[in-house]
Length: 175
Image (cartoon, rainbow, N blue to C red; front, side, top):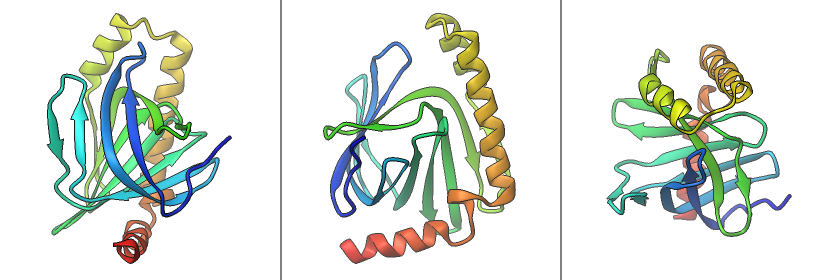
């Protein structure tokens, strides 16, 4: 498997289960790229939605993608602390064009005090029915929600103390 090189800039593409493009983030800087983990950073990055709308991210963010887990994590550095937005998604793939994954609607928002909320369960149920998610996929996704929440509680991976701050410091050396 090909992996992006640290210091390179890549595009992140999010798809839906039916293969439709969902969202594109431009200009994410790769801080670490292996076959298993990609850690990226961006700040004020253009984002294009599938309906053509565009917007720009508001704050610096560190993104964490894993090739074995069905979620990715975005740590957003805000004035009152680090907020995490976690997408329940397929593991990533990288193909020279972009880092790609399938977004499965369920999201977990984690606050600076490490409390969390599960979001978009209704949207998940609608898409599960509309796109006919197999029951085995449903089981994988909910298992990974549990793993993700365990990581939050255990301060593991991107939720570890100083993880986001240390990668943000590395990002600043590239600017």
